[in-house]
Image 1 (cartoon, rainbow, N blue to C red):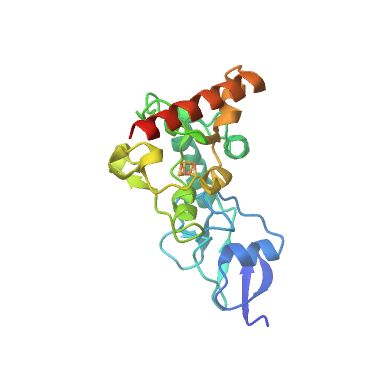
Image 2: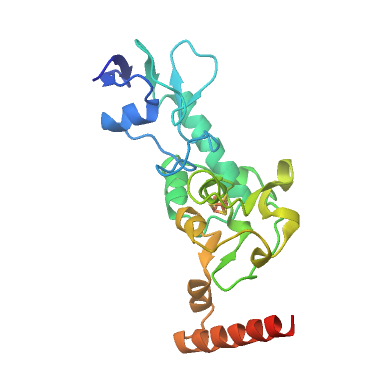
Length: 236
Ligand code: SF4
């Protein structure tokens, strides 16, 4: 039963107590952009792309985690909101390779962002990591949305193979002591690949096809890798 009345962009909206502003807005047909948000993951308000202006509040609120309240007046496209979203998109585009994140590039375009305002800001990240038969990791494309970590942990798999590592500009996703993925608790369920929005995680077969290998070359390579693995196990 609807028990909270608020206004979003001047429109009166009914919501359930405990719902977030994002849920109430989407139910009312008001679109708020998101990046780190995924309906299968716990919301954390990490990317701040969903910020909205709540009358009387000192700071912008992340709509994916901020709960609705009676009488709340929310602006989703105020000048302050748009400037904040544009700046965040510019910072993202100036630091990370977004070439395989079309939704984020579309947002950058929509908000009129100019990432060249932040020259030479590209983050130093390790080269593509190809250490297992199932998927590759290209952290130059990682936007640190945390979805992969969440589905690897309590949101789905309870495997805890990956997490944040480093601080500040050196923050990235990694394994414990940077161990190769086969030496971690990873069970290769593929859920991290499924939720990655930026192409940082990709099925290895897709990666090899992009590199120009044919399906039969990939199959031969896979058989060779399996033989070498079996030989290593026999040798102990
Ligand atoms: S690897 Fe993908 S899912 Fe994981 S934090 Fe980076 S962008 Fe997000």
